[in-house]
Amino acid sequence: MINKTAMIAVVGRANVGKSTLVNKLTGDKVAIVSPKPQTTRNRIFGVFTYDDIQMILLDTPGFHKAKNELGNYMVGIVKESVTDVDAVILLVEPVANVGTQEMMLIDYIKAQNVKSLLVINKIDTIRTDALLPVIECYSDYYDFDAIIPISAKKENGIDELIKLLVPYAKPGPQLFPDGMTTDQHEQQIIAEILREKLLICLDKEIPHGTAVEITKFSERGSEDSPIIDIEATIYFEKKSHKGIIIGKKGEMLKKIGQYARADMERFMGAKVNLQTWAKIKENWRDNQSAIRNLGYIK
Image (cartoon, helix red, strand yellow):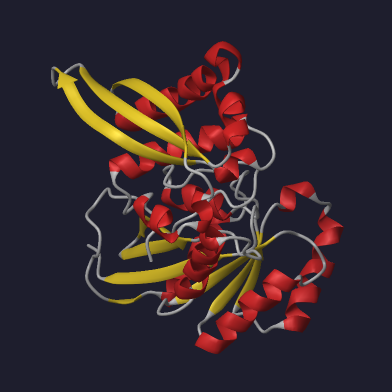
């Protein structure tokens, strides 16, 4: 029986593995991941249960220097997420230097007087003797409640991290139903799955100028053999991007759709009929109305 809750914000610069960590902790794919920075655009709630505690994780966009209105929105989400939580996980890479983004995040943590853990991710990428300088560097800069090295990808240190989160739980009612791992609606997850494949398949700046809108989501067939019909529009910012997204004879868009449909079918537990279109929406990342219409709402 749930009688405690802990609200934990997960923050850090872009591409440090926040979404990977949240996915591992919840045991489900609640956030998309890619090797490209700034994959997450909205705050995503991930939920899991440990003993009598419901842990609620706030996966946030990568903290970065904003270059457009969408960037400003994403940075604002990070700042807001540090407020009114029980604790903050500052996720960093194993580099013996406190960077500008980390300094700014620590300043926000200080300003809110919120408890915090430093989690050093990607320890599978360094030698063991290179870890101590990283710990010493951050210990000298700020007095965290605890510092723990992990590899979210390899699932090393995850159990130890969960145990460190337990003391932050407070008596309170269960906020999410049993079995629920995220606050995202099915259509949001479907849109994010497609955007993930855009990030993976396309190069350079193009995927960061794309957004996905689900325009049809309906079910047919029998209860034993359902079929989900999905229509999605991929928006891009420049005319020159259309040919790259669609590809020669439509091969790139077909490839993206195939990858996305496979993940969608695993998520939905049903056959998916996916139809995609590419449409220009010039400079939408600097258009507040377009940002709101595409689901990025403060």
